[in-house]
Length: 363
Ligand code: TRP
Image (cartoon, rainbow, N blue to C red; front, side):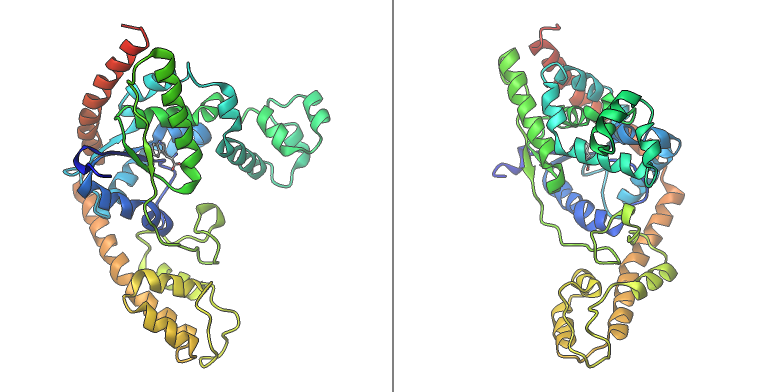
């Protein structure tokens, strides 16, 4: 990023519930760094949350407000970056509509995230109920007979495969292009979406002439590995998470449960820090983690003591965040903050939409 002042960073997060340490180390800490260097737009992607969660919509608005408080508590600052709610800025929908005119359905059907997530959701819904799976709403008897237990095929024809979900990358492209983002900080899992965004830009500019849309680059910020309590990736669906604001008591209990080297049973057994979850967290919270790993390897420290120290280190940081979160919840009105952000986002979005509408021949 040679010209840092002119770089525009856009990123969004779906308000699907409270944040955990995987989100914190994977995304939010990077956002906090980016807000100091670039022109940043960070938003709550509530429309995106509806693409797969229309049945959980009763908690959407509350989750949005909680998420904003979470963001503030970890140091995101409305004086440095623009924070807003996607559905407050209608041009996101308008641009998505126009991008839909240049996006072949085949691109969307090929999108690996669409297929994988749809199958995942479908299987979750009908876990252990194959008879129901075949009778899912929207799946006709003929289809079910033709495809047997092929859940992938059935999912695609069920009522779960809504148009909005197929169009997820189109809306995401609109989010990005509306602000002429030069860089989008994303995890590898979101790369197909960004590639689609770039394809849409080229097709739009080619069809309508000119270069009204700008191709963004992915920004792979370095983020450490954050395993869940059981050693798998930290994820809400695995039930192995630690909250960013975990209570002291449950934090202690969770660290006690953490997966450690199964070959280290007695204190003086030589340990293997690779693959040990406690060690992975020492790396994040203990400045002297290298010395600690050495002691573990040499059998000079037991897992109990190692966990106890980790509990103290983590509680120090997490406890401070908890306090800050509680203060903010008592003093800040997230709706007000979002309204202010929306005004700023709209100014940029409206101007862009005008240029795009002109390019598309509408005005
Ligand atoms: N798809 C992103 C995710 O699930 C969220 C998102 C929506 C996003 N719109 C975006 C991220 C625009 C970056 C830019 O994590």
